[in-house]
Structures are given as C-alpha cells and as structure tokens.
Length: 221
Picture (cartoon, rainbow, N blue to C red):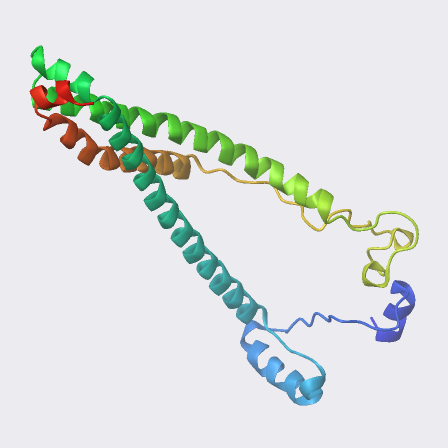
C-alpha cells in the first residue's frame, strides 16, 4: 500500500514505525544494511533477531535482580527467625531447666526447639504464598487503574490511527494488562526453601537450649 494512501486511511501525516518484511530470512542482514545506508541517522533500523536478543538480555538481568532480592530476603528472614528463637530460649530458661531436671535429655530439648523452628517455617511459608498470590492478582488491576489511557472522545495524537474506533480499531483502556502465571513447581520450591531456612536458623538457638545447665537455668532470673 502506498504511504500516501495509508496516511489518508490512518488520518495521520507522520509515522514512527514501519514494518518491513524480507523475502527471505537469509536476506534480513543485507536488508538492514541497505535501509541503514538509505536513511542513515534519520531512522533506526532493527531486525527482530536483535530485538529478541535485547529482550532476552533484559529478562536475564531482571532475573538476576530478583535472585539477589530473594537471597537478601532469605538472609534477613533467617536472622529474624534466629533472633526470635534466641529470645524464646532466654525467656524460657527456667522452663528448660525444669524440663531437664525432670528427665528430658539434651537431644529431646534440641528436638523441641527444632520443631518450633519447623512450625515457624510452615506457617510463615503459607502466609507468604497467600500474600504473594493475592498481590500478583491485585497489582495488575491496581496498576491498570493508575495508568489508564483515555477511552472516550477524541483520541490523542499517540493513539490516533488504526486504534481509533472510527477506523474499526479499539481504544486501549489500560497500559498494564496481563494475567499472572503461578507455577506450582516454583511455589513448592519457595515453600521448601522457607522451611529449610527456618530450620537452619533454629539450629543454634536449639543447641544453646540443649546445653543449658539445669541448676543454673532454674536459678536464672
């Protein structure tokens, strides 16, 4: 279709994007070089292959960022659980002394606190999964409400053309429109990591509790 005819149909005198289809995949690079030679600095010519490579690189960097955030979050969570368990051991020093005085062995006291850490991991993991799932469904609609494009009246210059209803198109009502995909494998993996970090963080406080001297523990103020 001639450019002039397209301008009339789209009701635009300018354009910011042209899609050019090569007759063969083998000719893509040559076509890019030819268009670059013709237009020079007046246009940026990009092949879909390079665009896909750029997108893959961005996704990879974003994945590294998310991995770093997850690592920091797990470290902070582990330190928090360790602090909670240490405070629990200190507050229950007399109780631990009584338990050992009536016959509880060191490994039994150790097991009690390990189980408590395990339960913290189970409950915390379930809470995290619930909040994360809810947020993944709430955030898209929230962002869509905050960043909503005009839907009535005359379309702005950026939306005129084939998106204009008078040419059979439809107005874009939101800049953010996507459906979250929650993978069961990732959920179970994250849940397992939460429990594992909780148990690991509770080992030292549990060991401290098992090593308390019963006489000193009972006298502890």
